[in-house]
Amino acid sequence: MRSSVARGGWILPVLASAVLCAGCQSASASVHYPGAIDACRLPGPNAQAQLAPATVEIPPDSVKTAEPRVIPDDHASDGNEVTTCRRLFARALGGGKPDLQDYRLVTIAVVRFTQSDADEAAAKATQLMTDALGDHSGVRLATGVGDEAGFSEQWAAVRTGNVVLGLAIADGGTEAALIPAATLDNVQAVVTDMTGTLQRDYQG
Image (cartoon, rainbow, N blue to C red; front, side, top):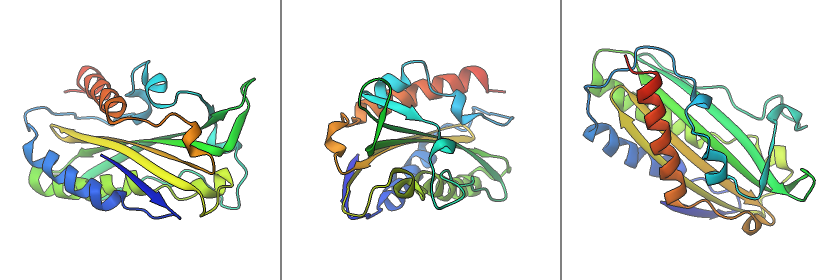
């Protein structure tokens, strides 16, 4: 599902909540992941090609902004732990130079249930995932893009056992159309790869 928003509107939390609830109710509870999960290690080697063509990565700590952090702190609650991985890209101008007026923010969020009541944990995980995917505060400051910029988002989420993982791609900027838009197929392919990595490297 893709949404396009102008002048800074944010509708991802509402949409993500609905889809994640459906995913949480239908997933198998037989798989178990006992330990902490590194969200940044889940994507496969083709993830950048899938999600950020014609862009170069920008280390978040290299972007000067009025705020102390570009990447918000992770959220958590009793019975769940959440880890996120955010990577910021901008359109390549040649020679590895980025154009910060045309950017892409890739957010991976992983929520692992740690309490015994799976249904209650899944409900809490849905809200945690909504918060983690929807919390893009600081992006406009980081890129110098104002409210007049276009904004679009593509995302997908899946539950496997006691883990919900999701991927959100936010594109924006005054020239956002110059970054080839992420497609739902792109995003789902990466989520499938991440699920495979999760099951291979983290299953108990």
